[in-house]
Every structure is written in C-alpha cells, then in structure tokens.
Image 1 (cartoon, rainbow over the protein chains, first blue to last red):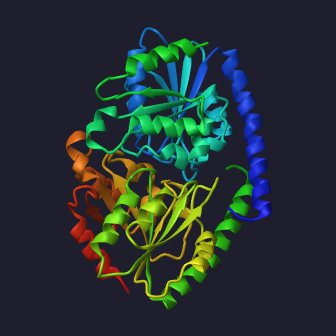
Image 2 (image 1 turned 90 degrees about the horizontal axis):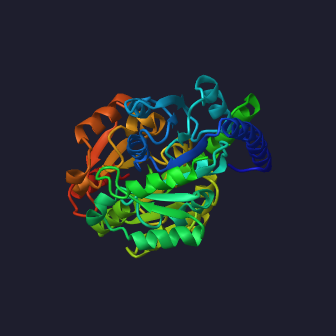
Image 3 (image 1 turned 90 degrees about the vertical axis):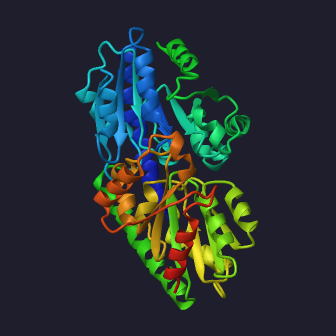
Length: 218
Length: 218
C-alpha cells in the first residue's frame, strides 16, 4: 500500500482492532480461558498440531478452537473429529483474522467450561502479525521444509510471537534445515522466544509441548 | 479489513496499481521480455527453482530477476551467484509486491538484452493475488509438504495463476500428499491451470518446465 491517506486508514483499522481485541481479552479473562493464536505459512502443520495436542490433553484440559481459513471448513472438520468444540471463520478475500471476526465467533460459542481456546489463523507469515485478537500469546509454527532463514525474512511475525514451534522434525533427514540456525535466527529477531521442536506425525516432542501448555493455563 | 470506507480506499489502491501495472507492461513489451510473477507460501522453494531454471537455460535465454522480501537480501545473493542480473526489493511491513515497487526496480535495472524477467514475490498465498505487476503470467509454486488441499483453501491465488508448479517431489515418499488430488483441487478452482511437477534438488521434471518457458518466450 502506498500514499499517506491509505496509511492513515490502516492506522484507523488497527486502532479499531485494538478496541475489539481488548473486549475479547475481557471475555477470555472473565471465563478464565487461556487463548493461543496460532500463525504460520500455509501448510506448516497447524491443524495436525492442534489435533494431536487436543488428543493428548484429553482429560487434562477442555479445549475449544476457532478456525480461520479463506475458504473451506476442512480444518474445522478435522478438529471436530477430536470432539473439541470448534467454530469456523471463512475470511473470503481477507488475509488474516481480526478481533471483530473473533468477537462474532465468540457470540456463537460458549467459553463456559473451557480451559483453553486455540485460534488457528489464516496461513500467512505477514499480515496476522499486525492483528491482536485478544490472545494471551501468539505461537508461530514453522516446518523444517520451509528453510531455517524464515525468522529473519519475516521478522515482524517472529517478534510478535512468544513461542516458535519447529514442526515436521521427522522430515529433518530429507531436507537442508539446521535446527540450531533456525533457533539462532529466531533469537536474533526475538531473544525471548520459547522454542519447541516436534513432529505431530511421530509424536516426538509433543509431551513437553503439552506440559508447557498446561503450565501456562490460568 | 472492515467498513465501507476502507473497502473504497482498497479499490483506489488497486485502481492505482492497475495503472502502474499497465505502464510496466508497456515497458516489458517494448523490450520484448517475457515476465513471470512467482508466488507461493514462504519456503515453497521459489528461489531454488529460479536458480535451477537459470542454470539450465544458460546459453538459451538471458534472464533477469526482481526479488521481493520483507527483509534480507538472502535470495538476491543466491540468484546473483548464478550470474543473472538481480534487483532486491525489501517491502518491510508490506505483504506483497505492487506495480509501483516493480516500476522503481525497473529504473535501476536495464531490460536491454533480457529474454525473460522473473519476479519473486513475497512468500504469501493471499495478498499477492490481488496485485498485477504487469507480468505475462503468475506462477504458483506449491511444495508437497504443504498439503494437497491448498488450492481450495486459497482459491483466489490459484485462480489468478496460469501455472502451478508442484515442488519438492523428492519428498513425496515421506509426506501425505496426493499429486492427483492436488491437481484435481487446482482444476476445481481454475480448470485451465497448467501443472508441472518437479524437484529442484534432484532435477526431476526440470527439463519439461524449462522447455515450457522457452516455448512461452516472446
């Protein structure tokens, strides 16, 4: 986008979003629900991670999910198969979820009895970085097939996130990806970022990820 | 984005972009250069594909590259190592290249003597779909690690593209990805889309991709 007028409007949009996000945050806090906003490139494995996380926390935490996609409810159906409560948001042409979409989704799903809410954002390493949804933290999922330089190429996103999950580590033998360099690049951008390495497919690393989530629950 | 005012401004932005794109198109046409706009998720392998394409067409076509990234010139340095002419655009917070950025890049690079210009867009399956840069066609690169449902989840992008390159096919034995289903999903969205399957790593499929490019050169 170019031109001063557009930039001002963009600021208005973000200011409005902040307001709505504050409203969401109050609702989450009143319901004592921990909220994680999952962001990534398309196809990094967010949905598979959520499915395995929900399965593994069965009996320990009640989890709800808001699914964001441009089109389809494919991911929502995969989540629903776990038995978790799920609401789909289709953003059509929009490239990110905003706080007002989440606010509307919350009108359709009860937070009563939930311990955690996972929000799966549209697959996009750029735009969702700018939109606070009222979450406690953003979690970026980066698969080992994407290259270990992503944190320095998309720094705004990695700065916005409290946690980086390195996913699909079962593929490490087949790709040119250095976990050490990925972590170094992430910490160059965001020195405080927490890192987990896991494979939703083999289950490796999932236990410490789930323990971390439980330690962060309200 | 929400609100009528914002949508109107967005339309202004796109109208302005169309104008600039038409200007770029005239420059490309006057110089008899074929221009491809490469789009994908972050980490789908656009740069590796371009490097291998340039190497394989050495002596057959003179190729220039415009590299778009939020930050870093990592990709431009990889392209420069092939000997091709390359210009880097850093978009900072912007999630896509627009025609005016390309126009500025063209002021710094001569099209004289080039047969093809490759524009590598910011890794993003959403926003670059809306921005014409003056190219002859958009090419979407989708790696087999991203899942075969991407064309139906990001339909606007797959409709905007003339070609889909399925990349990293060397990883097929290790992932749950059906090439047939990916093609079916792409053609549901865009019946005319041309499809190439290849691996920049092993070289499989590169020859027919390069032949296609040569057949499309002006």
